[in-house]
Length: 216
Image 1 (cartoon, rainbow, N blue to C red):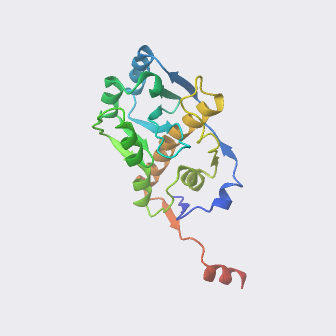
Image 2: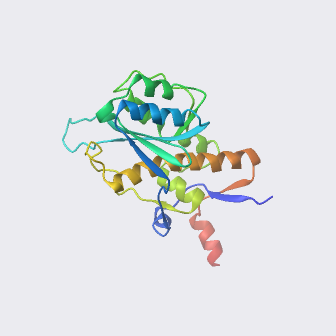
Image 3: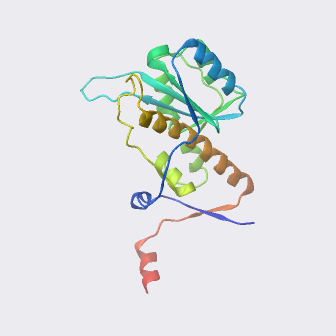
C-alpha cells in the first residue's frame, strides 16, 4: 500500500510556486424561483455537495452586508444562488437542513451564522473541513493552504474582495465562487478516502535543528 505524505502545515511561499487550479465544470447562476427548483432537484440526487458563500465586502466602519451568494457544487456542476436577488427561500433552507445530503465547507460557523442573517436556519448534515483535517493532525485552516497541501495546486483568491451584489457577476467571479465550493467537495473525497484506508502520514514542519542536520 502506497503511503501519502501530507504536511502538518503548508508554507505560503510554496503555494506561490504551484500551478493554478480552477473549476472546469458547468456553472449555473440561479436567480429566479423556477431556477431554484431546478437546481435543488439536481442537488437532492447527490450524497455529498461542496458548499461556500460570498458576501459583498464592507469598506466603511459600521457597514455590513448580508450574504449575497450561496454556492453548492456537485462533481460536474456548481449552482450559484444569488441570495441578494431571490433571498434564502424555504426551499433552499429545507435543503440546507436535509441530513440525507452531506454539505461540506470550511469555517462553517462563520458561513452559517451569516446565512442566519437571512433565515432562521436549522442546518443538518454538515462537515467542516477545518475540524476534519484537525482530527488528522493537519494544522492548515485556509482552503488555499489545504488544497496546496493535498493536491499540490494553487487556488486564486483574487476575486475574494469583489462586489458580490454586482449584476451580472463577471466570469472571474463565477469561476472563483464555483472553485471554492467544488474544492471543498474534492478535498473531502480525497481526505475521507485516506482516512478510511489509513494510507497517509503527516510530516512535521521543518525545524532549525532539522535543517542544520540536513546541511551537515
